Length: 325
Ligand code: FUB
Image 1 (cartoon, rainbow, N blue to C red):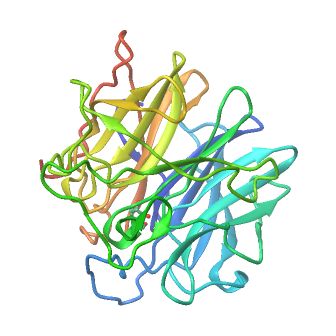
Image 2: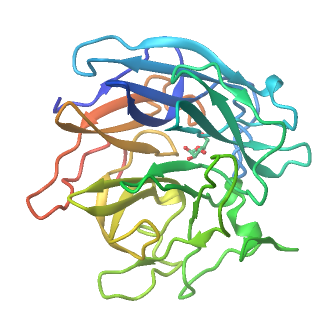
């Protein structure tokens, strides 16, 4: 599949987290909708209130199966608003969906919902994960069966409101030569319902070994973390947000540090860019979204997939997102 293709043509879906469970691909997207909320830097226009799950055994040729609504805001006891990018992990016969949601004080927390089936429905826990904050949880299972969650997002994702895992009185966004704000990584507890430790910063280095700086907006982390392994290296991939790139950095273990390598996807049409990378039936795929089908409406995005290729040295071939550079 050398050309990107759209996956769902009768609804708006975004932020795909994709995994192989029981030999099938399962896609866990955000479910965009038109709620009439004006666009702003806090992302209030991303006013989603439920999730669907999709699956397929043949991503090249088959239509996706839509398993319908698997979790909705009204099922969640602590819900305020905005169900953003989720992810799902499998452990000991259960599927755990991790999701960001604002509580009733408009603070993003991360919640967990459980199912016996990868296609849901998912039953939410009564409270958010203790010590959780910000958005975009992505869960990675390492080969030793430890599970790590990567999370965080700037601006509307509220990461600038925290330092050393404590809420600040005033949000602080580094600028200029200060180190860029890092995403976070945390090992999950054995029962998958909490953090096993304090979250750590995900340190991104420039190829010269120096910390990435806030002014490096075309390569610093903004949101949309993902982790995958390739040739025993750990690939941390993410969006640069206001510069609209998907980038990657490589490390030797799940905690990093990770050294910047380059761009995976040039800008798409639409403000946000978000992705997951997964191997299926011997090929690697980049799942992502753009806003072409909605005529460029940033809050109405459509799922896409394209094959992702590595060079012999483990670097990734840059894909053209089709938006403005
Ligand atoms: O879908 C809402 C937000 O937009 C996600 O959490 C971000 O990653 C961006 O895609």
